[in-house]
Amino acid sequence: MKIRMIKTTITAFFFMIAGIANAWCQKTDCYIFNGETFPDIIFQSILSKQNQKYLGISDSHREMKPFNNFYSFALRDIKADLIIIELINIHCLSCQKQAPIMNAIYNLIGLDNNLNNKIRILAVCPGNTFQEVDKFRNQYNIQFPLIPDPQFEIYEVIGDQCGTPFILMARKNKKEHIITGAHLGGITDPLYFMQKVWDSLNIDIQQVIEKTKKKAEIKAVIKKPKPYITDAEIKQKIESSLERQRLNLLDLKKISLSNNQEIFFGKAKQKNEIIHFFTKLISQNPVCDLCHAIHYILMFDEKGIILDFMPVHITKHENIPLNLSENIQLRKSLTGKSILEPLNFDPRVDAVSQATMSSALIFYSVGKASDYYEELEQKGYINKQPQ
Image (cartoon, rainbow, N blue to C red; front, side, top):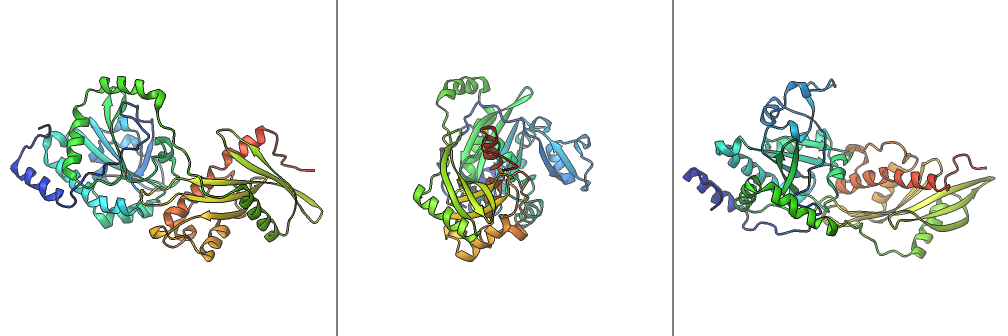
């Protein structure tokens, strides 16, 4: 038996907690391999004195910001042999269900003096603000650090894992950390999870690294979901949008971008002015493991200004499609803004009711549209001062 049962009371507690749910979620379609080096990420968060002590972060990591307890640190700064990184979104139902289970795991590790000196837990919350994370922490009485990731920056560096909750276990190896465990989906059996923790803590890192080198050539590539919409339907939506904007379509053609991406390049007339515009069908994997992917059409001009936002398939709680007024609300939140400037998502203002995660994802993916703009500029399609 690999798990060391130090005390009878701990053993009893294991099985009491295991009664919460009786099966470890068996999702294995994660897109990160054991043996890979954990990305060199700088975490930024407000840490309480308790969390600062828990991670072993010194005051030298404190930043001069409006918050006295704002810290910037990397995994290498955390005093632990094994770090458990949980990716959650506070609006994700699976993440909410997992919160008490992770609390129990945190407590179980704390009961074992040997494990408590070697293991630390922290959670990253993609798409969530400091205020949302603080509310979640208080609601579920979470003792380990929660790191807000409102702009999906950490989430993007780690890699789109097609949903939360997602857990990574990283072992210290000299000056870097090696992934020794990964799991996509909710944890339902703390006892089995602790077995995985024990395995990760004691696994031969070099053997894992060697196995990963052999897998490197066959590593899965995440594919963006594709909606069931034809080019003819996209063109129809473009024409309706231009009519709504009182623009007369002069020309429309599809052009190819890198990574098998496509975009429509068009010309329209408004009074005596010729406007060049670009229209891109954008699809984004969901953050929550229970949610559907989102699909929408974005139209922007040569200056990067968003001319229109056209929903194709966007859902809210229980995967119910947004209604007309909710789609209009999103359009008003985005039109007129620039894809070349940071889009700061404020859930109190920008989120559609019961669709906070979808709203956050839309702002995140719209913000990435600047990549298309840069490529269009490189290929000569962008003329910032059209004649």
